[in-house]
Length: 116
Image 1 (cartoon, one colour):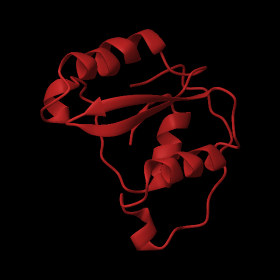
Image 2 (tube, one colour):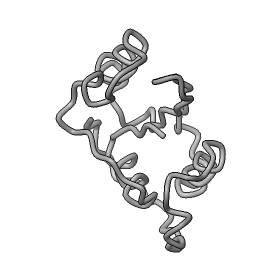
Image 3 (tube, one colour):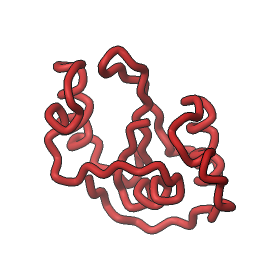
């Protein structure tokens, strides 16, 4: 989802070995990596959600995302239907999957959110 599209500098991180780019890292480690990439910004928000009986982290930058849209398009549907195929629960034409954390960081800076 697009926010106010304010460009911020982000830390270009060293490319990770392929095995570390994969989604096999723990949630806390992934969150720490995102925080480091965004210079520990104060407006980075991390919200805990549960979907398909798995813990998820919803990550976004509060100052550049439209929080009301985020609530309606992502949070509320996941809370109301916590099981199923994510693409059938979250109705947005802008869902992208990636294992590349640089792509994830760029998306956050562009006003998108990430579910990890």
